[in-house]
Image (cartoon, rainbow, N blue to C red; front, side, top):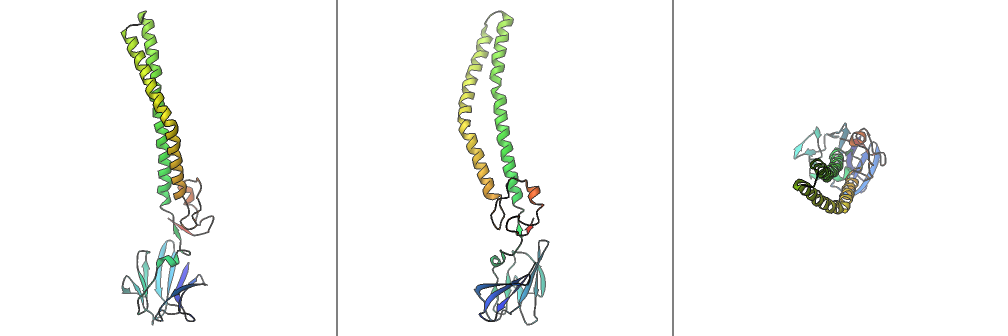
Amino acid sequence: MEIIIGRNPKDNKLLLKVDGKDQPTQISVPATVGPQHCKLKIENGQIHVKNLDINNYTYVNGQSVESKLITRNDTIELGSDRYLIDWNIFSPFMPADISHLKKVWEDYENGNIALQIKERKFNAIRSATGIFTMVAIALSIATGGRNNWYYVLYGVAILASVVFFIKAYLDSSNMPQKRLELTRQFQRGYVCPRCKHSMGSQPYDFVAQNTHCPYCKTEFIH
């Protein structure tokens, strides 16, 4: 992608030419900005700026340059008046970085796994009440009567059953709520940075295989 930055001589407004197509703006610029002042070339996630006329002045981070590899964290100023370019004006044309979606997916996946492990651990512990009861019955049969160990184990089983019942009752509403919150957070974050359309439930590795957003066609980098 190539973006030529310049000034429209008719109204002194900032004019962008994106891959040969004019993209007028309503942003006023000083006369020291040339009609075709400099060019940004975006390729493979890298951005090059090139001054297009020897009479123009293009500054990157305060230093005059003719050609330079830059990033979005650098400042670009044009002309002797040092007109500062706002990177936001390029947003509709620049590639969208989707690398942050990897963490969004991992947080969602790990969150679901954590909830599943919690449920399974609880079910495993709850099964201990049945073990206590069976051991108590086995002791009763083996000793021919209900000795002290029988009452202790049976009492522990009853107490554990009550505790697990209360916890299961509380989790019956807490767990679905946690899943809902996790899903909503995922749906808000797992979207195209440009059009905000959901990337669905595809793992990040599959999404990263797309070179462009399937909805707004913005180029993806990661």
